[in-house]
Amino acid sequence: DVQLQASGGGLVQPGGSLRLSCAASGFAFEMYPMSWFREFPGNERDWISTINPDSSAIYEEAMKGRFTISRDNAKSTVYLEMNNLEPEDTAVYYCAMSLARGQGTQVTVSS
Image 1: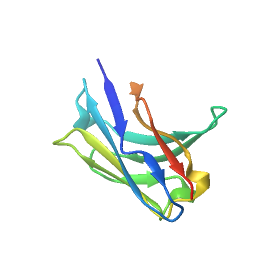
Image 2: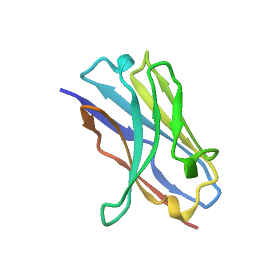
Image 3: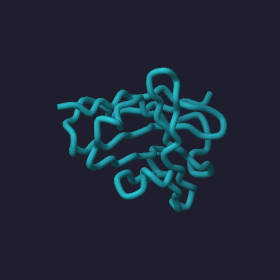
Image 4: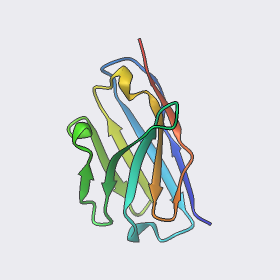
């Protein structure tokens, strides 16, 4: 079965950086686009970015420049590098593909 497990979240100060990972299993990772989303209290959700199997990527406009998505097909892992974090970035971050979404990792930006 498809499994997606995000990790790398935590507490960071405003202006700080985090690198999230999402380890995938149960499907041919190298053939699927992968996405990152975030979810706020109250279930409001933002799409952040999608990366294709060839590593071409698209971003939500507001995320461009601060967030970078990447993937390692050999490790079946997708990453999200987040820089210059703001308190408004506080959310649960999770990865997803067409067949499933994973459990998220909490990111808290606070001084």
